[in-house]
Image (cartoon, rainbow, N blue to C red; front, side, top):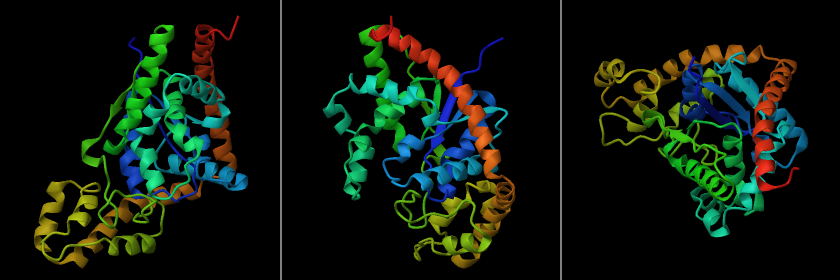
Amino acid sequence: MTQKQRFLTGLQPSGERLHVGNYFGALKPFIDLSQQYESFLMVADYHALTSVRDGAALRHNTLEVLKDYIAAGTDPAQVIIFKQSEVPEHTELAWVFECLVSVPFLMMSHAYKDKIANGKEATAGLFNYPMLMAADILLYDIDVVPVGEDQRQHLEYTREAAAKFNNAYGTTFKEPKEKIMASVAIVPGTDGRKMSKSYGNTVPLFGTKDELAKAVMSIVTDSSGDRPEHVYAIHKLVRTEEELAPLYEANRGKYKNLKDALVEDLDALLAPMRERRAMITDDMAREVLIRGSERAREVASKKMKEVREKIGISF
């Protein structure tokens, strides 16, 4: 019997409400593909420390983001859902990689430069972020990682860390491949830029219908065209272009009608998720994380044992 390849993704429990861009850009691709792979879903609470400085908030956010995962369709019976901080091998391996890569190499990170340019404090954790992300992936011999086009560099950093270690100590890590969903790699926000909580241009994933409507009605439009392109770009994630063609033809130039239609279609998709989420208790979420973290650590500890032997810190 052929062993399934491994697949990993994760989201930070930063406290921000998940948005439609998170769903179509990361969650839905993960859910759709999770049956084809041995799948790992990580709640990246150590990564969240680059922005969250409140312990109670981080604990709350961790449970909330897990509820989001499950409500969106992730099955804990099929996917190893775990908390990054419950697997200490992540930070241990990150330190090993940090001893192999150079400062100039890390300085080339687009994500780091963008965050600093947007006013974020230049902490050492933010700077070293790519090596912790490399550890997250390489600990589990992951074959495939879903990323947006703008995150391709993260996988390049991960492959470089693997290559540096393999060259120094012998073949230990496999170099993962990115899986970019071309049609949804970058989901546009209400202002036309990539949908991002940092830009304040999001459509909430678990918002009420009124909140959905408020966000959709704020989508910027170009009055010179027959079709509002930013509205259409989000709409075609919910319905096929063939289904949308007659709607957009019949409402050429009628932007409000098309926004109303987008609200209805988004709500039809998201309302069942809202209902599922309301039924998930904190205790249920904790139990999922406990079980999943135990399973993840079984895998990670075996890899880290091999690493310790090769670098010479175990006898």
